[in-house]
Image 1 (tube, one colour):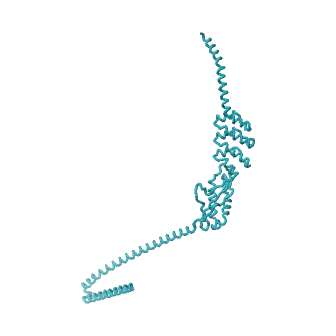
Image 2 (cartoon, one colour):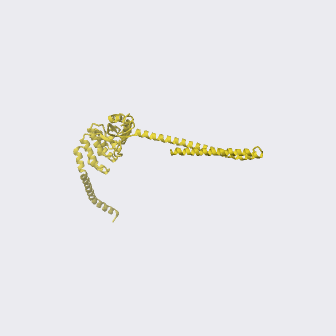
Image 3 (cartoon, one colour):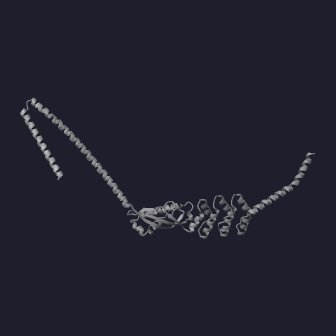
Length: 356
């Protein structure tokens, strides 16, 4: 068989197989289309009947992009039903893009609806930016409509109170409740609740410290609230302070008296140290004088030791006779006797005084 005959035979067989292959491909296409239709039929019907404007092709595309089509359809329906679709012109593609960026599309949609109902200016780019920044935009809108109460100090971090000392030295322990609402314009980049708590605590301590007497604070706690509220503590924060209320205030220790007592004790210790130093100096001088006395006594002993030598020299030089020497001895013996009698009389009188 020639080559041309083989080619003609293969071409005839190919033309016979092509209709079968085409039928199989068509059946597979129908099956795939039917499977996708069954998967997204409910969402497509909802979109058509509610005017969301999301077709079957868009649903399949979102599914292939790893986007949950049911969330996008629900958000789009919510915006259409709330009358926001024409106001903000947010298509399903914008919703899908925000979902792919890691945002919470449902929260942003509900926040837009809440802002529209409350007549609060908020557009989609701002709400999406707040959500992508990590803030809960829906909670922010709720706080803007329904103010939130913040305890100062935060009971989750400490169970204590704000301790401050009035002008008269009495310690006051206060607890405050701060009512705030969200400031949408400063939500991006604004400070959080921790800053509000810190500033309010600082303001209360400063206000109490500038009060002359603790009685004034106990009589009129509102004065502290007004003083702190007028300091503009909400600057550069995400909140607007509505009110500051002193929830509880107690009298603590008399810090001024304790400090004065501590100062007096410190002064006493300083005086004692100075007195001890003076006593040590006096004792040192006394020891020096005793040493001088001993030195002088030694000199006296040395001088007395020269007397026998002088007498002996006087005898040798015949300047002193035996009678003179004996008279000198008698005088010395008489002097010693008188000293002995005088010493015994002093001892006897001292014993009598002691017995008396």
